[in-house]
Image (cartoon, rainbow, N blue to C red; front, side):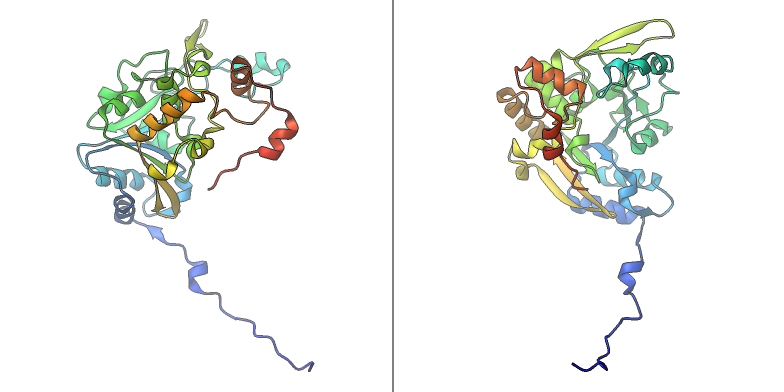
Length: 313
């Protein structure tokens, strides 16, 4: 073979590899409508904002795009959960015993105006919006903007925090709601906790969480969604193709789901197998207690590393 053979080396990288699109409010509205977001519906949004890519004018314009998609009769609802009042001994993965007292001393009671959303920046954006309302649950708080925002968030019960009288449950009872998972999977889909409540899942109804009421007093919540680390398993439990629409919003792979039929299908499946959505992490306090409740064998550390779930996005 001749040593004079010359290799072709491209001197230019195609523009498509180096240029990132900047998404406008109108682009995002169009993406949402093409995906199937319905006018007049309520929209439960779980979002990784960075997955959208660059948004002209900042991520607040994504919120504007959502409202343009649902119209004047819709409501945006987003998690504004606050974990700063929870006793650290009841964390999903508790800290070492010698650290509990130090962390507990830093707990702060829930404050409607000052306690931040600790479930992503989109919920914090909705919470801080001047049009917004926030439910006054000390842990499972929701923020909402729109026609029914006040109706969904006022006078929520302390117990059964994800049940029929929770903001999620009230949206479900109206029957005109969609779930939007932007750059996240079912692990963030809190409507599956509603399905656990409706199914009467013992590990949900019997769960308790201690929280700081004020600077000197602790209270207990009974019936509260804990770990969601196994919620990706819903795809093996129901015929998810019937309920999920996948598409792109901005740069983000996004899933749209009709809430009520999806929750009903999950409820029916959980009535038959209430432990089906437990996670596979042997260190998880919530799911280890649930396994014990159901008489299941505890998981071993080696099993977790073999079966450890991964996100698609």
